[in-house]
Image 1 (cartoon, one colour):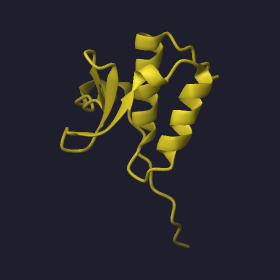
Image 2 (cartoon, one colour):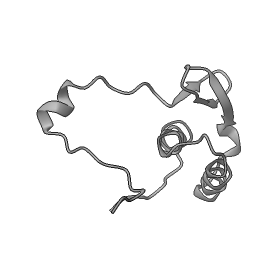
Image 3 (cartoon, one colour):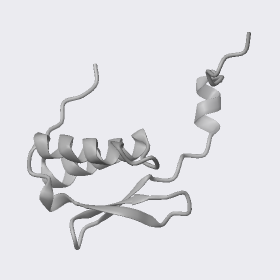
Image 4 (tube, helix red, strand yellow):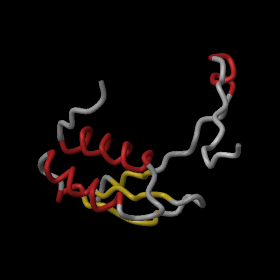
Length: 96
């Protein structure tokens, strides 16, 4: 029976260590306090002004807004959260 589920490959630690790192999904612009969400060609596709993110609730609003866009990946969102934490001091509690 065929399924629509993608097949996943399991990698060993050695295989993971040999892989090339993925290029960043975002680019920080310190002069403007903006984070550019990068497309496959490396261009800034969409910019988020970090000055508009002052609280975790603001961050959630941006996550909800961006998650509606078909081209945004989980990696874009994770890197945006990391920039907000690092450059704006926004504390976002996630994970286990």
